[in-house]
Length: 228
Ligand SMILES: Nc1ncnc2c1ncn2[C@@H]1O[C@H](COP(=O)(O)OP(=O)(O)O)[C@@H](O)[C@H]1O
Ligand SMILES: [Mg+2]
Image (cartoon, protein in one colour):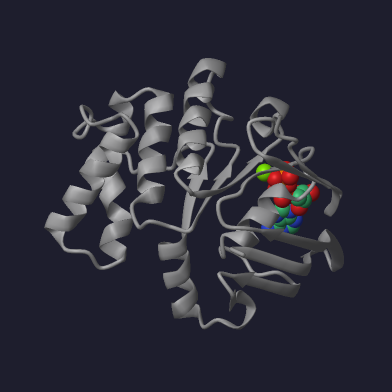
């Protein structure tokens, strides 16, 4: 089991009122799963992703990541876990504009303490893996949206995380380019990577093997695709 959430609640305090955003989420995700978390805008998807990604802590409830209790982890250890165990993909790619593809991909390996030669080798291999072996020295502005997202995927994978978390990964892409990114996700999942994709787009959700639906901060349905 990679992820186990029990009774996860998140409450924001706005103008002296408590606003419940997540209202008791129970969810487990096994190694190698490809899960889409779906639901309308405002249903709590990004809030849930930030908790799964250890970017934010729940107000209450427990979260085990690879059998470590995240709620009781020390800050420093938590940052390490986030860097090593989780790869993040965002709608807007979030690449450094003045760094080329290779430097962008290599950055998390620097934080993980790898030497310069190994960072470069690994980053090159990751960019080749996502089909950008001939774009190592392009700046983000010299790449298409789909290529930028593939650089972001290479960056997310460089520390060999146990899960890839993607929040609306195709939201800024046209349909065809979005399909390319989803094809890459499928290949990575076939190679054993655990994928959690947050989306409000049914076509994106349909590529996953399990759809978890959120509504008003609660799990509405949890459906496994029937393989025929
Ligand atoms: N930092 C915050 N403070 C207060 N309310 C927030 C905060 N972040 C999100 N919300 C609210 O929580 C709800 C869920 O947001 P979010 O998780 O981003 O939903 P989704 O990703 O499904 O669109 C929204 O109503 C949003 O306004
Ligand atoms: Mg969101």
